[in-house]
Image (tube, rainbow, N blue to C red; front, side, top):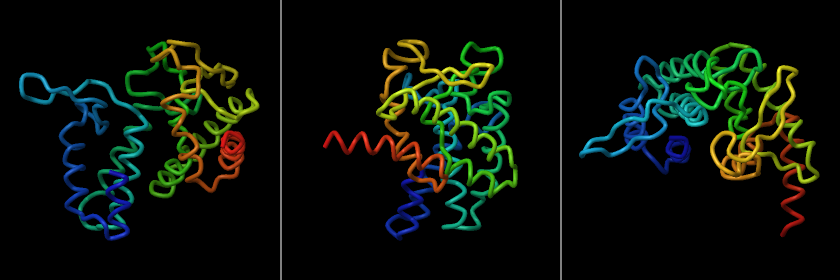
Length: 223
């Protein structure tokens, strides 16, 4: 959806293209929420939704809807975005740690409530949510999640961060260990963390820029 709206901005894509993707999102929202099922499986000729969400996907959908409202106003995209942003805050955030959780399943009753996926640190998205809604808690989440990311970055001379981290009651971030959350690479710079440089570079936030510059310096040494 983000790619479709960016194509629309450059007149390389149409509102019809975007609407097809939006329709898919609308058809596969979780029951009683605006969050999207993170996976659909083809069973007996029909798509069945996995009953859990993925926060990174939901945030990108919300970003796309906000931008689509600017490119193609009058289609209800902003209203959709507001509903989704509200549910992200309500169902995919840890208010105490000030983080976005990995999904709606990582609630207060879950062992994973204090897990942070580094690719959920999306400063540009948080800024856009604040600008759209006026809800300052998005700025607080942005600041705190960047603080956690900086803690992880400072633990290694490369500046690379792991896929997942545990957040303590003292608001300290420590890398997950193998198979803590999803795979043997939970504590490594892997399939989730590889998106972090792009997500940080999209923001003008000073803290985000400092973290990504350290990572890029390491990458440049590997040319």
